[in-house]
Structure formats: structure tokens, C-alpha cells
Amino acid sequence: MARGLSRRAVLAALPLSAAFTTTARAAAPGLSLTGKFVQGGYAVGRTTPRAVIDLDGQALTTASANGWFVIGFDRDALPTSKLTVTTPDGSAVDDRTIAVGDFDVQRIDGLPPQQVTPTDPALLERITAENARKVAGFASQADLEGFRDGFILPVVGARRSARFGGQRILNGEPKRPHYGVDLASPVGAPVRAPAGGLVCFAETGLHYEGGLVLVDHGQGLVTAYLHLSKILVATGTYVKQGQLIAETGKEGRATGPHLCWRMKWRGRNLDPSLLVGAGPFRA
Image 1 (cartoon, rainbow, N blue to C red):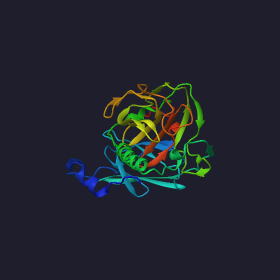
Image 2 (tube, rainbow, N blue to C red):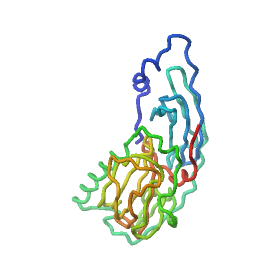
Image 3 (cartoon, one colour):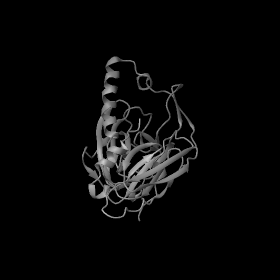
Image 4 (cartoon, rainbow, N blue to C red):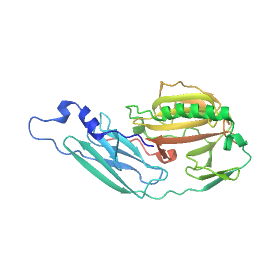
């Protein structure tokens, strides 16, 4: 579920100088927006600093101190989307059509049964605990603008072995879609931060992911790096674009060495490859 904010609560928290004027009221907020308006896509926008950002009826974030913000469209986003930015002086609206994504079917056989449908009580307890820690990591909402620099590929020279959004059939059993981009590469290949951000999770030995790193690039736009053989950063540290953060592996649920690269925004699953080469975003 996407995390929502109370618009009234956010507006109430704005400084009094922003909430009231002693003379004529300021103009309603301006709004510029660019991105990929497709299932799994994104948009980067600029408006009044600290304006409340409402997407499809949910107040989800606020613009940065410079007025920048980022939003995402889930893999299963509806055909239309409505963005509203609100300040004490008014609001601006942007309605968009969201194109249908091009998703395939991905069949993977030969996985250990406990990696597909675990039944062992101790393992299920472990998975539940790991999931709670991952959820906390994905909930990060750093007040950063790392997304404005655009993104580079985290692994150079890798072969794309699986696309984002494909329906997964594991050992003949239909599962949820694949929410990542798989980049096949030898064990130990360097993984670099595709954009600047805050490391909000870094653990090894997870049942499904093996080594996992999460990086918040600002306002909850979080990228994930799965199946890592080595992690070179710690939770709470800041990384720059291009900085070495890990090495690829085949840990967890994996049939061979690769990096599974994922992206989420406020609980929505996005295609990280759509942001590669899109920036930098400037005034």
C-alpha cells in the first residue's frame, strides 16, 4: 500500500509565513512535469517549494525546498492519473493518460521448492521478520534531490536477461510479476549507485534476495539491488552517482549470477531502466 499523508495536516505544518499573507494573496502554484507516462513509469516536476503533492486522490509527498518532486506510476496503474499540487494560495492540476506497459511471460524451472512455496515454519518466521525490515527500508522518505541528476546503469556491460513487469511462472506455478530488471554478469562485478542517495537498507543472507541494498534517491524513490555477493556500504550512509556500493552474485532465489535491479515509490513498483539517461533535470 502506498503511504498517504493528510493534506490538512501537511498544510497545517507549513510555516505561518507560507500559510498567510498580510496583503494580497500570492498566485496559485505553477507546475511543470516531464517523464514517462506509462505503467511502471515516472514523472519529475517542479512547483512551489513545499507544495503538497497529491496523486489520484492521495496526498503522498511534498515538493523539496527548491520545488522539485518525483512521482511514480505502478506496474498496474490505471489508464488515467491526476496530479494536484496544493499550497495555501491555491492548486494546480495535471491530468495524464497512462499507456499500457509491454510485459512478457517469464518461466523459470528447477528452483528449490522452499524458494518458491516455503512451508517450513522456522523459514516462514524468518521470511516474515526479513520482510518487516525490508518494508521499513522501502518506507524511507529522505529529503533529497538525487533523482534530479538522472540515472546510469548500475552494472556496466551486463546483458539484460529479464525485463521489468513480466508475469513469473516458477516451477510451473504462476507467481506475481517480476518487478525488476535482471542484468546478467559474473559474480563479483561492480555495482555502482545509479544516482545519489541515502542507503536505507543493507543486509546479507536474506532468503529471497541474498545480499540486498536499498538506496533512497529522494522523496521515497528507492532502488533495490538483489542477489549481491558483497555489500560495500552501510545503512545510513550517503552515496554519490557512480560510487561503488556492492558486487554482483547469485545469492538467494537466483539460477545464475546477475543483479536484479528494482525501484519503488510509495509502494508503487517502477521500471528503473526508464530513468536511465533521462536527466539531469534542471530549471
